[in-house]
Amino acid sequence: MENNNQEFKDLIEEFEIIPESMTRMSNNTLIRAKKRQRKKLVTTPTATILAFLLTLTFAVNISPTVAYALERIPIIGQIAAAVNFNPSLQGAIDNDFIQYIGLEHTLDGITMRVEYVIVDQQQINIFYTLASDTFDYIRDWSPVIRDSNGDSISSSLSFGGMSGNHEIRQLVVDFHRNQVPSDIRLQLEVLPLYSNPNIPFLVGEEPYDWHSTPENLITFAFNLSFDPNFTERGVTLELSSGFEVDGQYMILESVNILPTQLRANFAADEENNAWLIALDFHLIDERGHRFESITNGISAMSSSNSPMMTTHILHSPYFANYENLSLVIEELIWLDKSLARTRVDLITGAYSHLPAGVSVDQIRRENNGVYLRFAVDANSSGHSQQIFGWNFFNEDGVEFAIESMSSFGDYVEFFLADFDENVVYLMNRFTHVSALGEPIILEIR
Image (cartoon, rainbow, N blue to C red; front, side):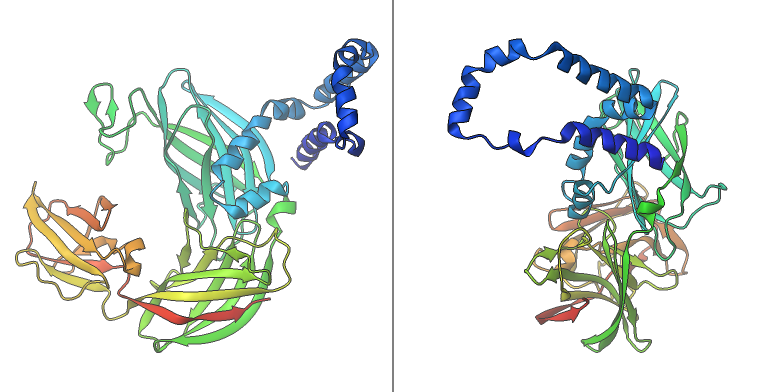
């Protein structure tokens, strides 16, 4: 794989090189060039044209990988457009930190092609396409990542869902404490559709039930190997910088500066009465250039035995030129350990407590369940946070699951299906916010 990448890169660079003398033309030279343009086109030596064609043909015949890669050059442009919102991935592409894969399979009239990956120690970005002459739309249904032995790998996945034929799709695999392995097995179930993908979803003329597992899923599988020149890149800075906010003592233990992201790793004092849930923070260098929080993807990670988010993620300065870096914390969002559950009386609307800036707006019974809508203060920090978890409980402690939750404007709504009881316990995702008048500044380099 490494030889294929280098062969492709060398070939592209050969055709991209423009002599410096050709990039600078005076006005007089430009005028003469225009006058002689037709003559130059006619008198260009045929041998030069043949030599170029022979060189290109020879290069393509050297390796099928290169021939295939030349056909896929426009894909790089699509990938660049797809990651336009992500400065870290933009920097990776600008610095050739991208590995060519070029694998494809065709099953039941659908072709899946894994084009490229951007990978480092802790994250894999897989760029692929799905195409079909038979189906109108293809929906990504369920991706699974396993190791080379077929065993499951602890990781977090985020992906799109619906894109057009041949359009670039992205699957992001985040690893928490463990490192990206040298090989993985990617398995992706896709759902072919004939109809318009807008709500209501239809297959043929029947409404599609998205809560059930479709019978016509098609499963693709690829074995992917990663170049260690990518997976071994990254810097870890050990810090142990302590600070206190509203009686909560925190420690910034370390920072991982990776090509795809920066990870700030925190620890908390055992005597704290609240868990850290989210941060409003950024990184800044000596020139004042800021590296902001992730807004599309995983922005924080928790340990397995606590609701606290121990790792918080920013865009990376890895490809930037800097001498000094400072972490600037402006706001912290907490979950009080004693207020993790909210008791709501579904008859009167009374509640024990709610997250800051949240209030009950509507409660009504319908379709053998309960519809709830909560108003969220647009000026509160919680406006951008998930308010409740996906599980809830009755008075006896029996656990249930919320199937869907919607946020629109200043409201959050969801439905408790098949729930006919009068009291529900909702799981708060946060309780209160510490907005700092003076930000906390931690020097990290």
